[in-house]
Length: 131
Image (cartoon, rainbow, N blue to C red; front, side, top):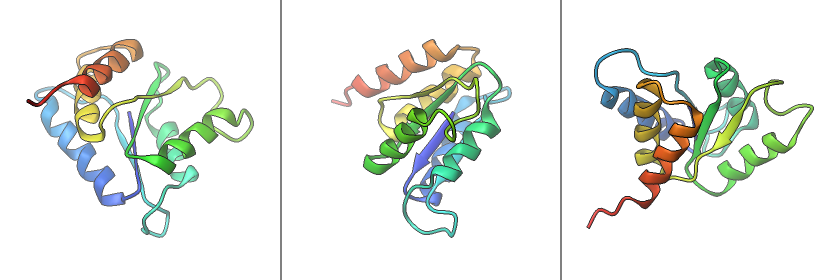
């Protein structure tokens, strides 16, 4: 899983929270791709590309984005056959709230769920009502 946020701190903190909530055992790979390379606020295609490469183990990578241009950055990488993601990498964007989606995705993946199960779990996180 890759967490794409406009803020380095938000992406890293969300990854840490999701890992902590996995429980026992080893969590599935997760990488934070937050902010710009200089630490500023924004999104970086290079940081996203690197994060996908770091976590890809051949069974697919689910990407969660915090908002707007983070989604556009990932969509642009998906559309770029030459300079986007590594050849053969299955990368899918989850349409889910950032924190809830991250926790649900990582727990599901860490329990052995495939990319289809992880995306289904993030769909559930998107529709979960708090009241």
